[in-house]
Length: 218
Image (tube, rainbow, N blue to C red; front, top):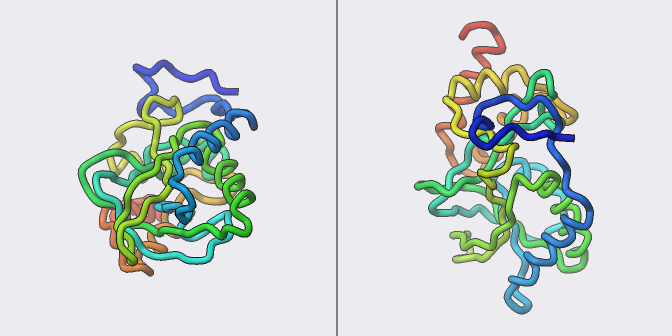
């Protein structure tokens, strides 16, 4: 398992070992603590800003476009399994507290399968602890919503730090993992945003640079 680089040198340093995975008990504790902050019988919403938009892992009975203020989406998380390897690590999307506005999708989880859905979500998003679950307020199509989303823990060794766009493109272009090419993860997320009219020009430019690298024109 992971022997993390020091906090002072972790940013932009490619990992050489796998990251430590949380135990079942640690994930269960995180889920209990998050649910303890649920207000009464309010519907349980989850905000997706990356692959959850186009590949959710839970049953839901309603979905709508939404936006979150004061946060930014960026490729800032090392992935050495899902969309990369130790030889060629990839990058995953993270939500960071920054000036700006993030578009994505709000899913209202089905109460009939709520327990199963939440456990599947925690198994997926809380594999290593790079994310922290938060209840935040969103501007949805039906008004203000309170929902769970996963924000990057920037002190975690899996956090890749600030990477220039060209560096991101080079990493993404070379990375392939258990679930396929890192480039395709970027493209499918961008397509999901475009289908909902939620433009992300920065991600569009990133994909353009990735594809130029892939075909050897950059």
